[in-house]
Image (tube, rainbow, N blue to C red; front, side, top):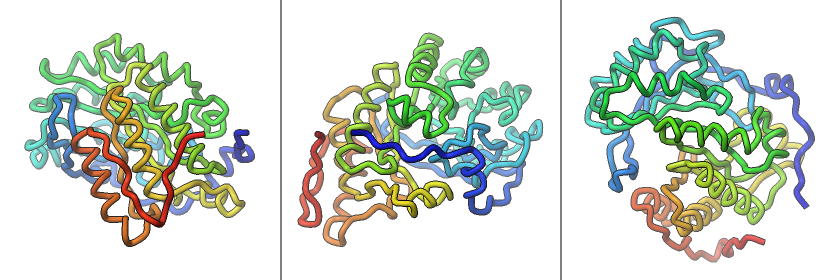
Length: 321
């Protein structure tokens, strides 16, 4: 039987938070160039710019992205200034992620007046990827796409998290599975690609149950029209999750679980699937298998070929009930 933790209020989420970082609205939080297996079926250099803007208003239980956001609305022209400062360093990349710790099409996060100027600066990238919640998907998405250079595609990344309405309500996602599917299908009809984020690990679940919900959610995302899915391990450190863990609502965090989830998702050959390796060093693995598991995860991410999880005496294979 599925167990869901006690309801968590918005006030609890906010009061449990550690300190927020100081953020300059005219400087990006950071940027990097990574490699990603693209829809062109090859590994390509991908620029990632972590934009400074206003916090997402939803206060999702699992979110830790608020730590590097602004208090209040983003000043007009600030995001454009952030990009102008780093774009010269990113021209070796062929696609770019404008990740803003929230919703790109929230007019208080990225002012509407700035979007055309942002789009005009995307020359040379074949794909521009932005983050957004389904409730902020609408005409503004199609308008932004129309402003991009002719050869540039738009991809909108949205968090499905888990294909279960009870869990979504508990997570404060303020959407249903049907809402996600409707938004994804609408974006696809506009000629916009969709990337979905799926959680691995939920408070109070065991490894097999976590694996079940992750794979089920990956399938749901692809059915809704997603072109690519990223599996994101649930992370502690945002305050409220640490508090729940202290109350006994823990979740599986062994590296073999992430490895198994990616392996099984790729075996289904529904589309590109990635394991998010951010802070993966916090996941448990013994000294004998940690480096091999990380190598295997990187191999699957970069080739999109399923590779059997590493066999080790520290863990037994995970099977779905």
